[in-house]
Image (tube, rainbow, N blue to C red; front, side, top):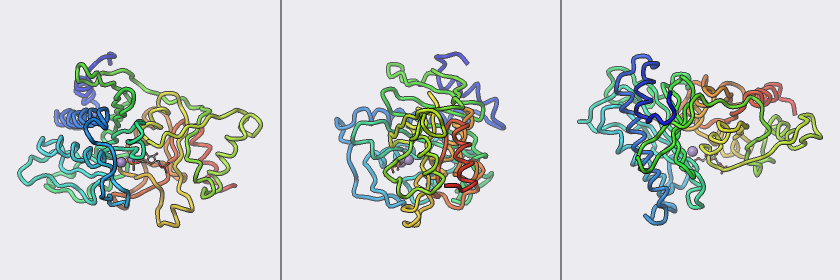
Length: 339
Ligand code: AHG
Ligand code: MN
Ligand code: MN
């Protein structure tokens, strides 16, 4: 498709590839884009409009919510609840599934989102983002339940994220490759700036929070240790390291120039009764869909993320994604369990 095409035109043309899609799908993505533009505006204005800092509330996962977490969640709901494009919405920031008002028209999609990813970066003016995943809603159900959302990532109709960085970018897959759009603030439109995004299979760059090193399992320890040995070790090449602490920014870097991102489970998380840090439904599944569509790999250490049958809506899992050959190497180490 022509570079410079608006997101709306792109979706209308792309809809043909989606089984049973009607104008409703275009409408839904437009709603999401509207919410993202509003969030982008607030993130950009920051302290000028008093949106930085924390609230005194916690989300269902026990994390202190930032003001912008709460506002972004509200903006997503506001953009979607009366337009008849979704049947229900689930978000990292809400304890349970959000049901539409009784009088609102129901649509045929379910939306899952991380309204603002990278909360720890909000107050220090580093990139944050919004992540979303779209599933088909069950037919004839006015108020879908959590159970209706518990579908494996392979069933996603579309997934994407919006990165609030030096530029605001929306990255989207509908299962037919990955495209990137950049917000033209003069126009108020997302315009296509990159098509057929492909992650290089090989890389020399890894991303992991090394402050948890002493809690890592042996396979992760082995993989990172070999990267750190560089040209003197078994990998026979020097590696670079990055950690932004916003998954959206890490995935965006990997889509742009390759790399591997790891947020494994570790003994500290397990001791706290957790199965990982990142959330399957709001973070891992949409990012895995995007990364696979860009020729990369995405696993939880044992299996492909998209094949996981979810147990619950706020489920956490280990995430390893990026350049295919590196992800396969980590997979080998995890499967053989070698130190
Ligand atoms: P969120 O702000 O939505 O809770 O997600 C933050 C996630 C993810 O974006 C990032 O990769 C990771 O948390 C950072 O975790 P650490 O602070 O443990 O490095
Ligand atoms: Mn997040
Ligand atoms: Mn979040």
